[in-house]
Structures are given as C-alpha cells and as structure tokens.
Image 1 (cartoon, one colour):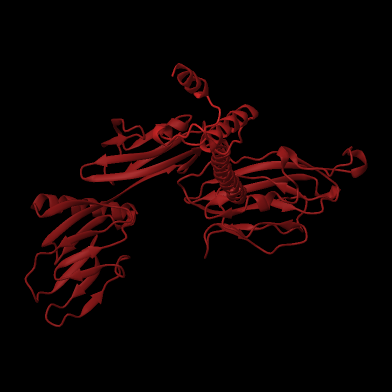
Image 2: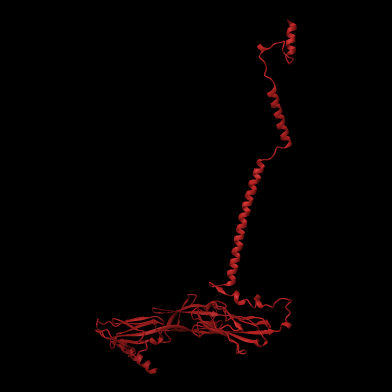
Length: 424
C-alpha cells in the first residue's frame, strides 16, 4: 500500500510539472468522463496508476482489457473514457496513450461515524472525504441552513433533535449530502400475562426515519428451541420472514415502524428477557429489551373479566388492529368509515326534518284559509239573508193613474185619500 501511494504521488508530481494534468472530482455513486483528444481511427490506451484499463485498436475497433479493477465497468467512445458507479478506490491518476493526456481523479464521499442513525445524546463524526489533505477546509451546511467553514471532519457531541436532518459538504463544484436521523431508541415496555394467555411483545421506532431498515430479529436466550421471525427486505419490502410456529405468530403485512410479535399460550418457562434488534442501512443497529412475567391464574383477581394487556390492548388482537392498509393502520380506516356513516345519517335526517317542517307550514296555511264561520258570523249572515228575501217578496208600487180606489186595500196612504173625499 505505501508503494501505491508513492507511485501516485510521483505520477501526480510528473503530470503537474509537465502542465498536462487535470484535477477532477467525482462523487461516490456518480460518474466521470475523461477525454483523450486523439484523432479518429487512432489507437487509444487508458491506464489507472500505470495499470492498463483498456486498449482499443483504432482501425479494427477491437478491444483489449487490462488488469485494472475498473476494466469491466468502463466504456470508451472515440477517445473518451467513461467511468460509472464511482467508488473511493477509483481515485488515482488516469493516463491516455502513455501520458499524452493525464487526469487526477478524486472520488469524494461523505459519511457519519458510527452511522447515519444516532441515538440521542450520543457522539458522532461527520467526514467529507475528498482525497486531499485532511486539514483542507470545506464548507458545511447544517440542517438549519447555517453555513460554516470547517475541516473535512467535524465532531458532534451529545447529538439532539437539532442535529437531525440533511448535512451538506460544499467543496468547489461538489455538493455532498448526508442525512442524519437522531432517535431516542426502540420503544418497548415490560409486559405481564396470565398463564395460558397470549401476549404481544412490543417493539417499535418512535417515528419514521430516512435511513432504510434492512434487517432485524427477536431473540430469547432462555428458550433456544423457540423459532422467532427475522426482518427481510426482499420481494415485497420490509416484512417478517419465517414460519409461524405454535409459540410465536406475526403479521405478514409490510412493516414500517412497528415490529411486534405475539407469544401464544404463555407458560412459566417463557418468563424472562426478550431482545428486539433493528438494523439500518450502513450497519447501525438498535436494540431494546423487554421483560415478560407470567402469573398463575389463581393469583390473578380478574373480577370475572378476561385479563387484558396494558395500555388497553387485547392480548389476541394487538397485531390485527395494527395491520396496515394503504399506509395507514386498520383502526384508522375503521374510524374514518364510521365517521362517514354518521355524517351521512345526520345529513339525511336534517333533510327529512326540513321537508317535514315545510309540509307542516303548508298544511297550517291551508287550514287557516278554510276556517268555519263562528256563531256570531253565522247569525249576521242569516239576518241579512232574511232581509233580502223580504225585499224580494214585497210587491212593486202601482202607478197612480192605474190605481182603483174601490179595489185599494188599506195601506199607509188610505187615511190621506179618505180626507180628500171628505173635503170635497
């Protein structure tokens, strides 16, 4: 290894002195393209740290691979060399056609120690590796967007939620990002169960984190013959992998932050310590321990009711209610459905009541228009009718010329006529 560093230093010094060396930077996982700048149909030969990568015959187009570790992933188009899926070991001096064109490549990376998932109050180091002097200053951008000139390695003491989020290392044209997840650890609790009952062993993350969970398991040293499931990410995302046994059952649905399993038919021999382990991408592991206590039924005063778990969960239905459907737990969907039904019923009742009130108002109005006559109004109307009938039955007066005194009957004018006859 020291020999390789000396050779790299000599090549770098040589290309710098002749003025034909370019320094370029790449990011882990990215790609770089380096041009040899040769005419068409010219033989091209690329080397990394003086080890042959590939050689192409310009006229025939035949290729000859060398012994360099990148020989299988590179490609050549004309005189340009393309290196994809960069790794830190791809750093070095690339030369074309015996040094006619030389590039010094630094593959930069950013990472955290011990890992991107950190326990609250723990210490950590952030590394911005750009392959140069470790004391070279870079610009670090914190999750709060504050920028600060610092060394390529910075130390974080007693991390808190303020350190949670995306960190960025800025150097020349490079922008390397790293996401930290600060968690309080796996959540669990001690559980107690009557003999012969089922019990859920709790284990969960307090919240979703940006880092991917790649594995995990449950263990119990005091019952080595019991088979526990393991976390698996193959085929259908994060899920429990294993065979259901008569002792341990688990959900087959996709998991997110809840890693509970159920222990069935608890016996005194099952009492003891159970360990839940969750592994994140990058190798960081979190563990949590829970203690199980099994009590005899005779010592449990249930008051005629079936014993239940702590925090209101039934021992047999804890996993079912936590079943996820379209990203939400089952009980949330049931609550939304029940609320929707209640809302629809209220709307229907409101509409029916409004229609009933309108109908009642219409009936009252019609009744008010058809009110029968009172006794007073009935008598007045009858008296007026009788007057009209009397007026209709009274005979019309006879003209004076047609009157016959002999045939006149006594009437209001009979006395006047009699006086006139006496005057004559």
